[in-house]
Length: 328
Ligand code: GLY
Image (spheres, rainbow, N blue to C red):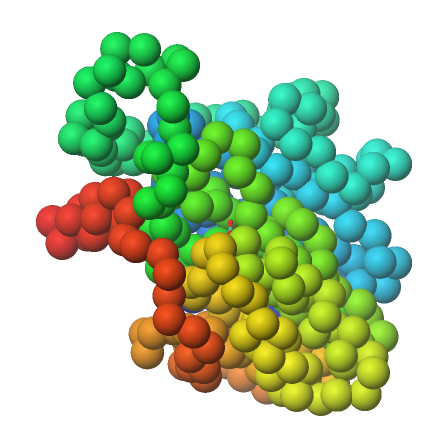
């Protein structure tokens, strides 16, 4: 048994480890862990407490994948619900579809009785309001409903570099593998922007025959490289989990133009091996590991591999987020 999560998994990884130890299936164990992250207001890039988009609305993305059936479910730009990971799981289990977005996802969440809630906590509202007052041109403020957002968005970068999204991948006692991810995405994003988290094969992929992979960081890059599916496919072609992740990093080096930022790749295989690499990462980049025989999950540093100068500039959201953290 093994579970790997990123650092944002802190509030949930003990629960996932406990459930795995007690014999729970991988998917149930990681869903339970992610629900704890989603409801934790101190985790600013997932669920309640997640940073809002440019309009001050929290739009959530999540996905799950059962590596044994290769069934998957995802929601994108979901507003007004506390546990997108469970809505994604219901998409997988109750619909003939795999991916719902926006109003359709919210309608489905209402229909299944998912827990509703306002994810914009007072602190996020305050930070967004301060950004709005300082950064939005007066003409746009006067006609905010129709205001151009492209320039405001162009400078937006993940506000919590290295701390965004939560990803959980696990191998259970029956040797079945699953993955799940949840995020509020890129703070101050253009409304409707989807990152890699709900895009199966980009932000996450799981196959009980070979292993699982999940990514955090700039989703635009892992969508372009198809990173999570690639890592699992490389393992199918005979590479070790470490070689597969390194090959995916090589793929990422080929990305030219567009946003080049930070990405962390987390992967496990069927034998309980794992590898976590932070592409363009910083030294504080850590992840959680729990395996058979460990009394508690352990926080470990990711291997850092620089691939290219980062092209993104710090965003207003990043600056406000940093100021807020300094004050805290
Ligand atoms: N990796 C999360 C996102 O890009 O939204």
